[in-house]
Image (cartoon, rainbow, N blue to C red; front, top):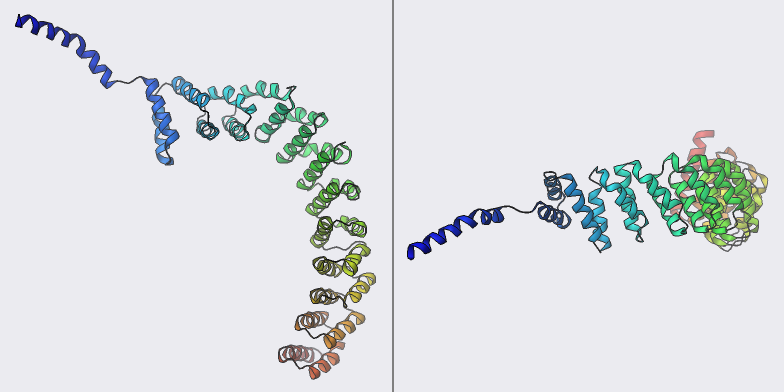
Length: 411
């Protein structure tokens, strides 16, 4: 009896020994792939992450791709989906193209952006029909998603689709198109962008178009930007001033200065003044003169005094001479600096007068350096008289140095 039991036990051990050994030493490939994928997603160290990615290459590409896509579809956290898409961008796997293209209409921007960047990296024309379907959607949100994708995936084949959308009934679609043309630097679209800047029925669209013209540094747009500079909408005027400043053409000086005569918005005035500072031109003196002599902003008056130094005209000099009585010493100092560019006897006499009456060293120093820059030998007697009367030891030394320089040069 005991012998029979041993035989039966031995039989079962032989029967089940091999399967038990297999199950303990082998693992389902799909389960192994899933484990490696989870390790990739959890790993913070980039080198180790790359090691896991290399390890996946020992498995069937079909199994790996299927498991990645299943993991992507089952992920519910946005950050995890983005992480997976970023990893998939490291594979040049055409099987990811269509599933990734479907994520171009995901409601989360970061997912749409990641999908577009991955598709750009993979580069495959199979996504073309999917994108065209999105472009032709009756849903304006999907049309916007198409335009967003074009920020990363644009090529010449999509040009007509994009530019046709400048006639879309939805203003947001038109704005997104203008931004896409700007991002991709599509120069052939400039005529359409100029037309939108001048004629679109919606001011927000016009502003987007004007901004694009500035970003393009479009010299051809300067005449229409001069027109728009007088638009009744202050936001449109502001954007025009910004774009003209970005283009930085001396041809804009007259229009910028003339706008200062009528402009009452401080933000726009600052943009106009900064544009004139940038191009170092005055244009029509009256606008800058108005700021210098009447504006309540000390900063604006200082910059206007600086701008008038580039003019060289009698009208500009007359405005500067009036501003020598400005209540703020910083404005008076900048006026002295600009008068030094005029190099005539009237300007010289006014600067010597400032040196005699001003008490603050700041303004007197600006006037003295302006006189020295004029380099007129007839200033020597006046400087010597000032030196003889000066009580401040520091400024007296500055006058002494100036007198010595003139004596060496002319005597």
